[in-house]
Image (cartoon, rainbow, N blue to C red):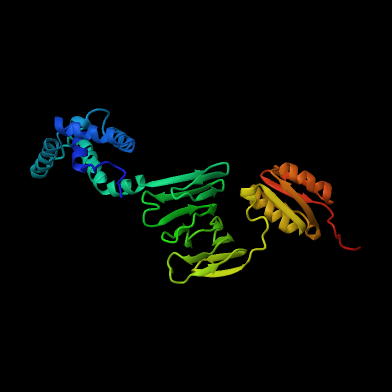
Length: 341
């Protein structure tokens, strides 16, 4: 496996370079390292910015840390040994040096201990869908569709010995079949394992992860309980709740993929279910003002339509009215089955 850098950089060498103490050969080594990879260059620029901002504008890169520390130590010792002395150290000299030395030491320590973290971070590839649906192809040829607001990441060694991705949000996967390299999706507390199939993973719920299978076979299990696996086949939906509780049932949600297809299908669907699907699809808060409205049913298909158009058509089909209060949509009316006198 290749590392993200052409060669690891010695944190002590980097500290000497940032403090201006590196010799000509060491400076050349740092420069060549930065030129070897754009990510090296970005990291060096970020560390330089941190270093420079830790000192009083320009002085940090030129300080002699050992000499400054000796000055500080001597002043502290002098104060300790001076009987009854109440004289404060010079405000113009050593307190500033102390801060600069502390900053230099902090940077050196931070560089040393955070280097593995930066290395691990730079070995990750992150795919993100901010405001719209995004389709990505993974290195093995598999396709992933990310719902807006979702994120997927995978390691640099993806497709070498295994295929492992981590999901935040919701995504639909079309996985290329490869029995020698199972495809694993980690989402919250759940892990979904497949060989080659198409399925949807929804980890947006506060207390559960829902996996719905279209083709092939899927195994769902808690990341903390990998031996307790539940098999899912086409048309089934598995749920993992808190405490690694697993359950499955036939998928009766015809609109579970509406975020990907852009279509909403209703056939004699109760209004309460219609509203639930609209809320999920458009990410809007919709409330029913009167319980009598829940007796209404709707038969309609909406394709690639905005919420305003959909609500307008529903008003034409059903005896109800729609208004908006702040960020909430209110549905009112007498209802389809009003109570008797």
